[in-house]
Length: 113
Length: 112
Image (cartoon, rainbow over all chains, first blue to last red; front, side, top):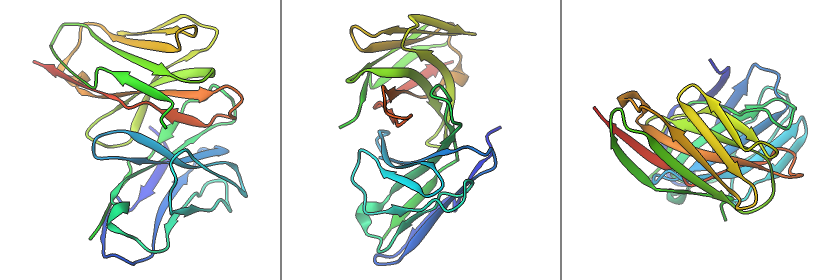
Protein backbone atom coordinates (compact mmCIF):
# COMPACT_ATOMS: atom_id res chain seq x y z
CA UNK A 1 0.00 0.00 0.00
CA UNK A 2 1.48 3.32 -1.09
CA UNK A 3 1.66 6.01 1.57
CA UNK A 4 1.11 8.94 -0.72
CA UNK A 5 -2.02 11.01 -0.48
CA UNK A 6 -3.66 13.57 -2.70
CA UNK A 7 -6.46 15.91 -1.76
CA UNK A 8 -9.01 16.75 -2.87
CA UNK A 9 -10.04 13.74 -4.96
CA UNK A 10 -12.42 15.87 -7.03
CA UNK A 11 -12.54 19.65 -7.40
CA UNK A 12 -15.02 21.71 -9.42
CA UNK A 13 -14.37 25.44 -9.44
CA UNK A 14 -15.06 28.55 -11.45
CA UNK A 15 -12.68 30.34 -13.77
CA UNK A 16 -10.23 32.73 -12.13
CA UNK A 17 -10.06 30.97 -8.76
CA UNK A 18 -6.75 30.18 -7.10
CA UNK A 19 -6.40 26.53 -6.19
CA UNK A 20 -3.85 24.33 -4.46
CA UNK A 21 -3.69 20.60 -4.98
CA UNK A 22 -2.14 18.83 -2.03
CA UNK A 23 0.26 15.88 -2.16
CA UNK A 24 1.90 14.29 0.86
CA UNK A 25 3.96 11.15 1.33
CA UNK A 26 5.11 9.45 4.52
CA UNK A 27 7.86 7.32 3.00
CA UNK A 28 10.65 9.88 3.34
CA UNK A 29 11.16 9.92 -0.42
CA UNK A 30 13.40 12.62 -1.84
CA UNK A 31 11.93 12.66 -5.34
CA UNK A 32 8.41 13.80 -6.07
CA UNK A 33 6.54 14.38 -9.31
CA UNK A 34 3.39 15.94 -10.71
CA UNK A 35 1.83 14.51 -13.87
CA UNK A 36 -1.12 15.81 -15.84
CA UNK A 37 -3.24 13.20 -17.54
CA UNK A 38 -5.45 13.92 -20.53
CA UNK A 39 -8.91 12.36 -20.76
CA UNK A 40 -7.49 10.20 -23.54
CA UNK A 41 -4.87 8.74 -21.17
CA UNK A 42 -1.50 10.30 -22.00
CA UNK A 43 0.53 11.36 -18.94
CA UNK A 44 2.66 14.50 -19.08
CA UNK A 45 5.36 15.37 -16.55
CA UNK A 46 4.76 18.96 -15.47
CA UNK A 47 6.93 19.34 -12.33
CA UNK A 48 9.43 17.33 -10.34
CA UNK A 49 11.62 17.76 -7.29
CA UNK A 50 14.81 16.05 -6.14
CA UNK A 51 14.44 17.23 -2.55
CA UNK A 52 13.70 20.15 -0.29
CA UNK A 53 14.01 23.52 -2.05
CA UNK A 54 14.56 21.82 -5.41
CA UNK A 55 11.91 22.05 -8.13
CA UNK A 56 12.13 21.65 -11.89
CA UNK A 57 9.71 22.06 -14.75
CA UNK A 58 8.79 18.98 -16.69
CA UNK A 59 8.32 18.35 -20.38
CA UNK A 60 4.87 19.89 -20.65
CA UNK A 61 4.64 23.61 -20.12
CA UNK A 62 2.26 24.35 -17.29
CA UNK A 63 0.96 27.53 -15.74
CA UNK A 64 1.00 25.84 -12.36
CA UNK A 65 3.73 26.28 -9.76
CA UNK A 66 5.05 23.96 -7.06
CA UNK A 67 7.00 24.25 -3.84
CA UNK A 68 9.00 21.81 -1.72
CA UNK A 69 9.54 23.26 1.70
CA UNK A 70 9.24 19.92 3.49
CA UNK A 71 10.31 16.50 2.25
CA UNK A 72 6.85 15.02 2.66
CA UNK A 73 4.84 17.79 1.02
CA UNK A 74 4.71 18.85 -2.66
CA UNK A 75 1.71 21.10 -3.35
CA UNK A 76 0.74 22.35 -6.79
CA UNK A 77 -0.86 25.78 -7.20
CA UNK A 78 -2.80 27.43 -9.99
CA UNK A 79 -3.07 31.18 -9.42
CA UNK A 80 -5.99 31.64 -11.80
CA UNK A 81 -7.74 28.52 -13.00
CA UNK A 82 -9.09 28.29 -16.55
CA UNK A 83 -11.18 25.65 -18.36
CA UNK A 84 -8.01 24.54 -20.19
CA UNK A 85 -6.67 23.38 -16.81
CA UNK A 86 -9.40 20.78 -16.55
CA UNK A 87 -7.59 17.47 -16.21
CA UNK A 88 -6.51 14.78 -13.81
CA UNK A 89 -3.41 15.60 -11.78
CA UNK A 90 -1.33 12.71 -10.43
CA UNK A 91 1.36 13.02 -7.77
CA UNK A 92 4.13 10.45 -7.34
CA UNK A 93 7.25 9.90 -5.26
CA UNK A 94 10.31 7.68 -5.32
CA UNK A 95 13.36 6.98 -3.17
CA UNK A 96 16.88 8.09 -3.92
CA UNK A 97 18.23 5.27 -6.10
CA UNK A 98 18.17 5.38 -9.88
CA UNK A 99 16.14 2.19 -10.13
CA UNK A 100 13.47 3.08 -7.65
CA UNK A 101 9.86 2.62 -8.68
CA UNK A 102 7.33 5.42 -8.42
CA UNK A 103 4.46 5.35 -5.96
CA UNK A 104 1.36 7.23 -7.07
CA UNK A 105 -1.44 8.94 -5.23
CA UNK A 106 -5.05 8.42 -6.32
CA UNK A 107 -5.10 11.66 -8.27
CA UNK A 108 -7.14 14.87 -8.25
CA UNK A 109 -9.76 15.32 -10.96
CA UNK A 110 -9.98 19.07 -11.58
CA UNK A 111 -12.86 20.64 -13.50
CA UNK A 112 -12.78 24.35 -14.18
CA UNK A 113 -16.09 25.81 -15.35
CA UNK B 1 7.08 15.53 -26.86
CA UNK B 2 6.61 12.28 -25.01
CA UNK B 3 9.62 10.02 -24.51
CA UNK B 4 7.62 6.86 -25.13
CA UNK B 5 4.98 5.66 -27.50
CA UNK B 6 3.02 2.48 -27.12
CA UNK B 7 1.12 0.30 -29.43
CA UNK B 8 -1.47 -0.80 -29.81
CA UNK B 9 -3.49 2.06 -28.33
CA UNK B 10 -6.19 -0.42 -27.43
CA UNK B 11 -6.37 -4.20 -27.29
CA UNK B 12 -9.31 -6.48 -26.69
CA UNK B 13 -8.78 -10.19 -26.07
CA UNK B 14 -10.57 -13.18 -24.61
CA UNK B 15 -9.79 -14.42 -21.13
CA UNK B 16 -6.97 -16.96 -21.23
CA UNK B 17 -5.26 -15.42 -24.25
CA UNK B 18 -1.92 -13.66 -24.09
CA UNK B 19 -1.65 -9.88 -24.40
CA UNK B 20 1.39 -8.14 -25.85
CA UNK B 21 2.03 -4.42 -25.64
CA UNK B 22 4.96 -2.58 -27.18
CA UNK B 23 6.77 0.57 -26.17
CA UNK B 24 9.26 2.64 -28.13
CA UNK B 25 11.35 5.44 -26.69
CA UNK B 26 13.70 8.08 -28.00
CA UNK B 27 16.78 8.56 -25.82
CA UNK B 28 19.21 6.34 -23.95
CA UNK B 29 17.81 5.15 -20.65
CA UNK B 30 18.87 3.94 -17.21
CA UNK B 31 15.86 1.68 -16.93
CA UNK B 32 12.35 1.10 -18.24
CA UNK B 33 9.33 0.40 -16.10
CA UNK B 34 5.79 -0.78 -16.72
CA UNK B 35 2.81 0.49 -14.78
CA UNK B 36 -0.87 -0.36 -14.65
CA UNK B 37 -3.76 2.06 -14.14
CA UNK B 38 -7.31 1.12 -13.26
CA UNK B 39 -10.17 3.46 -14.16
CA UNK B 40 -8.10 6.65 -14.32
CA UNK B 41 -6.76 6.35 -10.78
CA UNK B 42 -3.13 6.28 -9.63
CA UNK B 43 -0.67 4.04 -11.40
CA UNK B 44 0.76 0.90 -9.85
CA UNK B 45 4.26 -0.34 -10.60
CA UNK B 46 4.48 -3.76 -12.27
CA UNK B 47 8.08 -4.40 -13.24
CA UNK B 48 11.40 -2.65 -13.89
CA UNK B 49 14.06 -3.70 -16.36
CA UNK B 50 17.51 -2.12 -16.36
CA UNK B 51 19.28 -1.01 -19.51
CA UNK B 52 21.78 -3.88 -19.25
CA UNK B 53 19.03 -6.51 -19.00
CA UNK B 54 17.26 -8.09 -21.96
CA UNK B 55 14.40 -9.99 -20.37
CA UNK B 56 12.67 -10.13 -17.01
CA UNK B 57 9.81 -12.17 -15.58
CA UNK B 58 7.41 -11.58 -12.74
CA UNK B 59 4.54 -14.02 -12.34
CA UNK B 60 2.49 -13.85 -15.54
CA UNK B 61 4.45 -10.85 -16.80
CA UNK B 62 7.36 -11.00 -19.18
CA UNK B 63 9.21 -7.88 -20.23
CA UNK B 64 11.85 -7.61 -22.94
CA UNK B 65 14.13 -4.71 -23.70
CA UNK B 66 16.03 -4.04 -26.92
CA UNK B 67 18.20 -0.97 -26.39
CA UNK B 68 19.49 -1.06 -29.97
CA UNK B 69 15.94 -0.58 -31.23
CA UNK B 70 14.90 1.54 -28.24
CA UNK B 71 11.91 -0.66 -27.66
CA UNK B 72 10.32 -2.86 -25.00
CA UNK B 73 7.44 -5.26 -24.87
CA UNK B 74 5.18 -6.41 -22.05
CA UNK B 75 3.59 -9.84 -22.33
CA UNK B 76 0.77 -10.86 -20.01
CA UNK B 77 0.15 -14.58 -20.25
CA UNK B 78 -3.14 -16.36 -19.56
CA UNK B 79 -4.99 -13.08 -19.19
CA UNK B 80 -7.85 -12.64 -16.74
CA UNK B 81 -10.78 -10.23 -16.68
CA UNK B 82 -9.08 -8.53 -13.73
CA UNK B 83 -6.17 -7.60 -16.02
CA UNK B 84 -8.46 -5.10 -17.76
CA UNK B 85 -6.69 -1.77 -17.29
CA UNK B 86 -4.41 0.72 -19.02
CA UNK B 87 -0.73 -0.12 -19.20
CA UNK B 88 2.08 2.41 -19.48
CA UNK B 89 5.79 2.19 -20.03
CA UNK B 90 8.00 4.74 -18.31
CA UNK B 91 11.61 5.60 -18.94
CA UNK B 92 14.27 7.15 -16.80
CA UNK B 93 16.50 8.93 -19.29
CA UNK B 94 20.22 8.27 -18.89
CA UNK B 95 21.79 11.00 -16.81
CA UNK B 96 18.36 12.42 -16.10
CA UNK B 97 18.47 12.00 -12.31
CA UNK B 98 15.35 9.92 -12.48
CA UNK B 99 13.21 12.31 -14.46
CA UNK B 100 10.62 9.68 -15.30
CA UNK B 101 8.44 10.16 -18.35
CA UNK B 102 5.59 7.97 -19.55
CA UNK B 103 4.43 6.58 -22.83
CA UNK B 104 1.00 7.02 -24.35
CA UNK B 105 -0.46 3.86 -22.85
CA UNK B 106 -2.35 0.81 -24.06
CA UNK B 107 -5.92 0.12 -22.99
CA UNK B 108 -6.38 -3.58 -22.46
CA UNK B 109 -9.80 -5.17 -22.25
CA UNK B 110 -10.02 -8.83 -21.28
CA UNK B 111 -13.40 -10.30 -22.07
CA UNK B 112 -14.59 -13.06 -19.72
